[in-house]
Image (cartoon, rainbow, N blue to C red; front, side, top):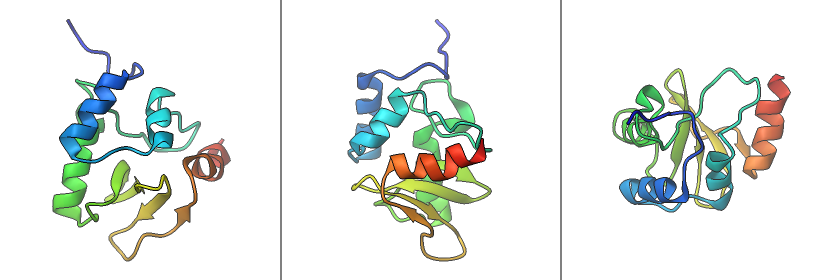
Length: 122
């Protein structure tokens, strides 16, 4: 059976990703994953937790960001942007982590990030 990397993940698949990464995802990020990871017309692709997702695999993206790029382990990178990352923290805030300095900017929630970054790109 071939896996469709663009289908909506199940709770079990999200739970398995949490376990593999050793962290609990904020509820807003779980909802984002279950909502199809919609980024409107923004020019980036979010990572997914589905088998067969190749370059968009969340596990691979997180490990690369943590081990090779220096992203702090308490941030979950979910979009890669030319070596920089959009990340979510345990409180559900979204941060833009850049190799050039501390996380900036920061959005108070997934909803605010989506409105200001994703919908603004439409």
